[in-house]
Image 1 (cartoon, rainbow, N blue to C red):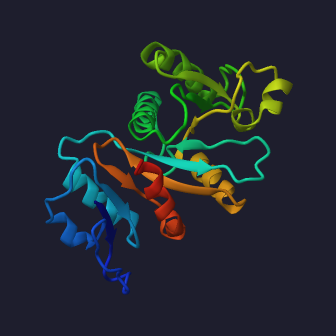
Image 2: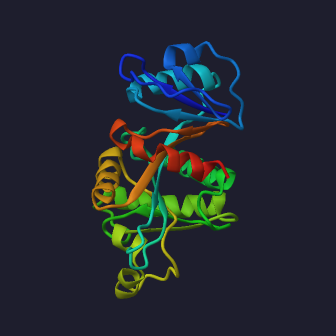
Length: 241
């Protein structure tokens, strides 16, 4: 079942319920006990803060760590660019190193559970604007350390790197900078929410199709911004497989 969550003060023309879709005002959904792990919960026209409070109260009594993955589907004229995920551009604002480790694990689990990325062994890149270890750049140091820690913890299921955004998405950029990675990154882990938000909005404004997911819980949750609601159907289809 797909549960569409809205705010009745903001959405007037509510679609009819059917065999696959149920529409709930967020206050009513809080009292509903029928959702299970195979269902999908979708944020429709509702403030993100209200939606998150609902999710935390209803599905996270054990206080699991939550993060956000934004999936981009490459346009037809992308010239070699491929689908990828940006995390976390919506939830964790200024994550420290342990938090970014948790963000990475959530993204890995999400990809394994949904098969949203078409590879058995994803490549995960931590953005490092220096392109190398730089003691004067704290984020470069952290990204470099994250590669080592993730290789130790998750090296059996994924590959890890740290460099600039262009090298994540361009073989030509990697060749020019002599970076040995034979295909584009599947998951890009940003340094903070400002960086992530700028990347996400830039791609959306340049014609890419994208949609967001809340990760860290057993239930699948589509969480787009109110300005991006047109992609909810595509997001549902992507994780319904």
